[in-house]
Image (cartoon, rainbow, N blue to C red):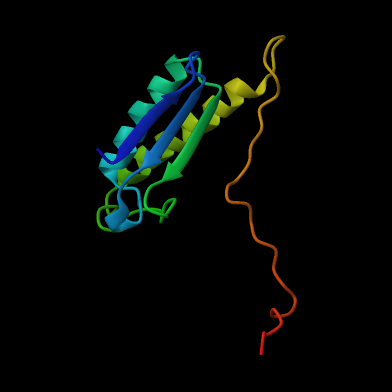
Length: 122
């Protein structure tokens, strides 16, 4: 398996999905996209309120694994995963009486660019 899932909380509201292909810097291939499709469908079936998508071994995701994206089926699988993510976000975005507005963030946050190099300690 190249995707690992951890369900957190008694109410199963948090799903942590970890891409685990460190030899390819967690790049997406057909198998990983297929697993992500299944994981997202299962998360939609639960009362998931938070989905954390992360990568193993110090890498998030290098993008598409170029060793196997030659055919159109890869693009179709990728579009399916992206559509599921957008649909899930849209479904969860309309706050109801008992649900707060969702938050979207990136981690780690972008580092500010320094205008000048740090002072030397010489």
